[in-house]
Image (cartoon, helix red, strand yellow):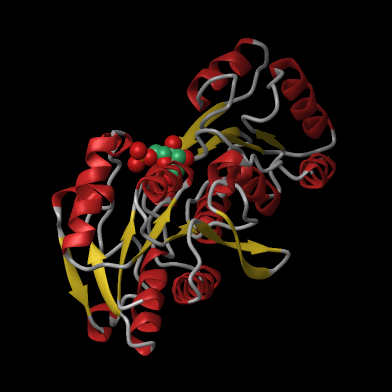
Amino acid sequence: MNRLALLTSGGDCPGLNPCIRSVVRTALAGGIEAIGVHRGWRGLIDNDMEPMDARSVAGIVNLGGTVLRSSRCPEFREAAAREQAIANLAERGIDGLIVIGGNGSLRGACELSRQASLPLIGIPKTIDNDVGGTDYALGFDTAVNTAVEAIDKIRDTATSHERLFLVEVMGRDRGFLALEVALACGAEGVLVPEMPTDIAALCAGLERCREAGKVSSIVVVAEGDDAGNAYEIADKITAQSDYELRVAVLGYIQRGGTPSALDRVQGGLFGKAAVDALVAGETSKLVAKRNGETTLVDLELAWKETRELPAHLLELARVLAS
Ligand code: F6P
């Protein structure tokens, strides 16, 4: 391995910069050149890349976002676009690629590695924490903490005014973020895409809380819930209850901001493990965290394996809401 390229693809999240820093410095320490690809797959197709040295990643361990920039690139699903990317990599003498992405981007990485003979390693990231094959994806911990900080503030208003708040968090397909945030905030309810939402049962549960003396309620709603978005769910609750109800959509504040210590350290571990894997001759692997250890699994698991929402955490949220 003489020269590797790295890119960040898909939605940004905190932890990308510590991971980029780790890839670059680990590569350089092993005598390998590091080439940064700008704007994810887009930059690979457009041949938009530049060499990175140790100083080019100085002062970024504490920054949100990605210094390499990112994009969503539907064009990469076409074989011709991937062919162009492969030609650009070959022309630059790049003999290994590290892709830091969510399950969509890692699926693209699988396609690329099938089409090219180029060694390729994936690193999981997304605040949704829904990449298969790994217990953890970069960005999740910071996003949980950001949402918890916001909801703690919302709780002050909810209690002062004796209100019910529906707080929508991200999670297009999965409820990992919503569940963790609900637990950490002591929410009275949590709605996730994995479970059918029963508005009558939700209202009955909130009513029990009120009868037990609670003066405010918070329900955390994952944006992909089957009953609709938080505003639609609010209308349904209002139609069958007398709550003074407000909605707060946390939105993109969950994707930005200073990475937590956990995301910085995990970014460092994932970045080094990816470079080590390339040096060891591995390809089509995902760097993963499993049972507390950083390890390698088949890249295909990233999008083929569906992680279960932990049933014991759902049960804990239910019991503690009483
Ligand atoms: O990164 C995943 C995610 O946060 C989803 O939960 C959300 O639906 C999506 O990104 C929105 O991303 P964008 O608007 O940047 O495409």
